[in-house]
Length: 346
Image (cartoon, rainbow, N blue to C red; front, side, top):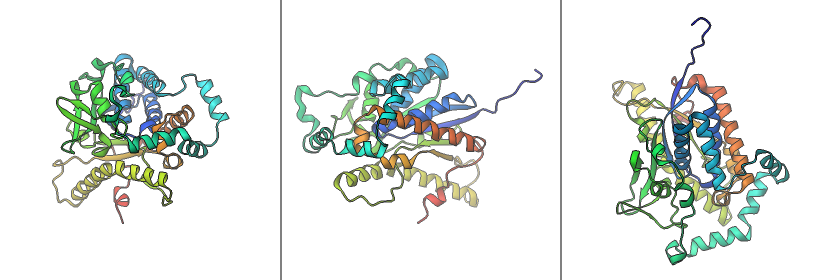
């Protein structure tokens, strides 16, 4: 047809990190990506909050397209604690202190101190008949016919096998409410989730998120990592909470670094001609993050959903995704936008 414009659709895979309530940043990134019909999501690998975001996106998309995915993500985070009324959310944002001050106030509040002490000194197995998993009422409401469907983006959910220490990938019909709870099961807060006789903890210990499910033939070369655990902190932590927070970030980034290093190794072999082209996939790595904001937050803002923090994280995610699309849309399918060699240089 004369005058018709052919859209240059880019197919990408998404790798969604876990990080508790900080997953609201990923909510914002996904919200912005879903607005752009030039970008097609082929597959998702998610851990913890990343798995929840992935499941909400897929269920919404199959039931209502891109707008359905956005609405379902809004529903999910509303269940977590986000304010659903946009005007009210903006008013709360204006009336609240700077993010760093709010984060510090939460970290040193009596309520968080009590929670932190309880999780350090008491096992969740000591709760007896009073034990409950706070995520269960939310994930039980997911539309699993859509989450497990063969159509739509492939979805891979990561958890850690407690007995073997190995990563477990749930996909297809294996993605249940138990699988999502397993992916987000912090062992100091929740009992291990039992699935088919095996016990599982949070997937962040072994894959945050796992990238290897996205290497399969038929999937695009591009992997966009939505990173919510800061890769770098300038200051060395000195107080106990800051030390614990940085330990948490380093441990939950270690598996991602390991897989990115392996990708870099393969890319070097391909570039040097040491490996025949086509023998291994030349993965193109992209990353959307906001380390400046994440450096202002803490393990307290991960653990306790605060409506103002959630709103700011979503807005930051949207802004980061918008910047990436503006600067790098044409790079998708063509080249990396992350310099892996520099990342792993001494």
